[in-house]
Length: 105
Image (cartoon, rainbow, N blue to C red; front, top):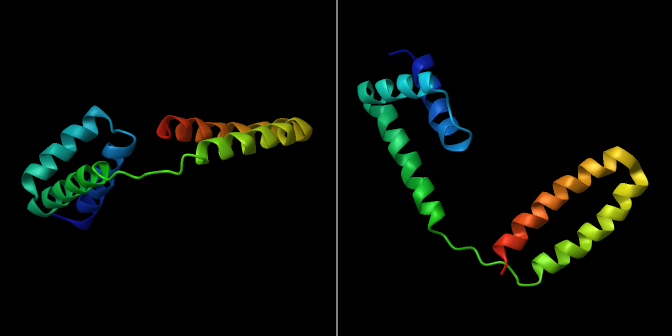
Protein backbone atom coordinates (compact mmCIF):
# COMPACT_ATOMS: atom_id res chain seq x y z
CA UNK A 1 0.00 0.00 0.00
CA UNK A 2 1.16 3.53 -0.60
CA UNK A 3 1.96 6.12 2.05
CA UNK A 4 -1.05 8.25 1.16
CA UNK A 5 -3.44 5.48 2.22
CA UNK A 6 -1.67 5.08 5.55
CA UNK A 7 -1.66 8.86 6.09
CA UNK A 8 -5.39 8.97 5.33
CA UNK A 9 -5.99 6.12 7.77
CA UNK A 10 -4.01 7.89 10.52
CA UNK A 11 -5.96 11.09 9.94
CA UNK A 12 -9.30 9.27 10.04
CA UNK A 13 -8.34 7.37 13.20
CA UNK A 14 -7.71 10.66 15.00
CA UNK A 15 -10.65 12.47 13.43
CA UNK A 16 -13.06 9.65 14.29
CA UNK A 17 -12.29 10.02 18.00
CA UNK A 18 -12.56 13.81 18.07
CA UNK A 19 -15.19 15.03 15.66
CA UNK A 20 -16.52 11.93 13.96
CA UNK A 21 -16.28 10.84 10.34
CA UNK A 22 -18.78 10.11 7.59
CA UNK A 23 -20.23 6.66 7.07
CA UNK A 24 -18.24 6.30 3.85
CA UNK A 25 -15.02 7.14 5.69
CA UNK A 26 -15.94 4.69 8.47
CA UNK A 27 -16.40 1.92 5.93
CA UNK A 28 -13.13 2.77 4.18
CA UNK A 29 -11.26 2.89 7.49
CA UNK A 30 -12.67 -0.45 8.70
CA UNK A 31 -11.64 -2.10 5.43
CA UNK A 32 -8.18 -0.54 5.56
CA UNK A 33 -7.68 -1.63 9.17
CA UNK A 34 -8.72 -5.17 8.23
CA UNK A 35 -6.07 -5.20 5.48
CA UNK A 36 -3.24 -3.29 7.20
CA UNK A 37 -1.76 -4.65 10.42
CA UNK A 38 0.33 -1.52 11.02
CA UNK A 39 -2.61 0.86 10.88
CA UNK A 40 -4.74 -1.57 12.91
CA UNK A 41 -2.04 -1.58 15.60
CA UNK A 42 -1.96 2.23 15.56
CA UNK A 43 -5.76 2.37 15.92
CA UNK A 44 -5.57 -0.07 18.83
CA UNK A 45 -2.83 1.97 20.50
CA UNK A 46 -4.88 5.13 20.07
CA UNK A 47 -7.92 3.49 21.64
CA UNK A 48 -5.83 2.18 24.54
CA UNK A 49 -4.30 5.62 25.13
CA UNK A 50 -7.75 7.22 25.21
CA UNK A 51 -9.00 4.60 27.69
CA UNK A 52 -5.96 5.20 29.88
CA UNK A 53 -6.43 8.97 29.83
CA UNK A 54 -10.10 8.62 30.77
CA UNK A 55 -9.07 6.65 33.84
CA UNK A 56 -6.87 9.46 35.19
CA UNK A 57 -8.44 11.60 37.88
CA UNK A 58 -7.36 15.22 37.91
CA UNK A 59 -8.20 17.11 41.05
CA UNK A 60 -8.80 20.83 40.82
CA UNK A 61 -8.52 23.33 43.65
CA UNK A 62 -11.93 23.98 45.20
CA UNK A 63 -11.45 27.73 44.78
CA UNK A 64 -10.73 27.53 41.05
CA UNK A 65 -14.36 27.76 39.95
CA UNK A 66 -15.04 30.71 42.29
CA UNK A 67 -11.95 32.56 41.07
CA UNK A 68 -12.97 31.90 37.48
CA UNK A 69 -16.47 33.21 38.25
CA UNK A 70 -14.99 36.43 39.65
CA UNK A 71 -12.81 36.78 36.58
CA UNK A 72 -15.84 36.18 34.35
CA UNK A 73 -17.66 39.05 36.06
CA UNK A 74 -14.70 41.34 35.35
CA UNK A 75 -14.54 40.08 31.76
CA UNK A 76 -18.28 40.71 31.33
CA UNK A 77 -17.86 44.35 32.33
CA UNK A 78 -14.93 44.66 29.91
CA UNK A 79 -16.94 42.96 27.16
CA UNK A 80 -19.74 45.46 27.59
CA UNK A 81 -17.24 48.29 27.30
CA UNK A 82 -15.66 46.85 24.10
CA UNK A 83 -18.79 45.89 22.18
CA UNK A 84 -19.21 42.78 20.00
CA UNK A 85 -15.53 41.75 19.95
CA UNK A 86 -15.47 41.76 23.72
CA UNK A 87 -18.67 39.71 23.81
CA UNK A 88 -17.08 36.93 21.76
CA UNK A 89 -14.13 36.84 24.15
CA UNK A 90 -16.50 36.68 27.08
CA UNK A 91 -18.48 33.80 25.56
CA UNK A 92 -15.28 31.75 25.25
CA UNK A 93 -14.44 32.46 28.87
CA UNK A 94 -17.98 31.59 29.97
CA UNK A 95 -17.77 28.17 28.32
CA UNK A 96 -14.52 27.54 30.19
CA UNK A 97 -16.13 28.60 33.45
CA UNK A 98 -19.14 26.31 32.94
CA UNK A 99 -16.78 23.38 32.31
CA UNK A 100 -14.87 24.12 35.51
CA UNK A 101 -18.08 24.56 37.49
CA UNK A 102 -19.24 21.10 36.41
CA UNK A 103 -15.84 19.60 37.26
CA UNK A 104 -15.57 21.25 40.70
CA UNK A 105 -18.33 20.18 43.08
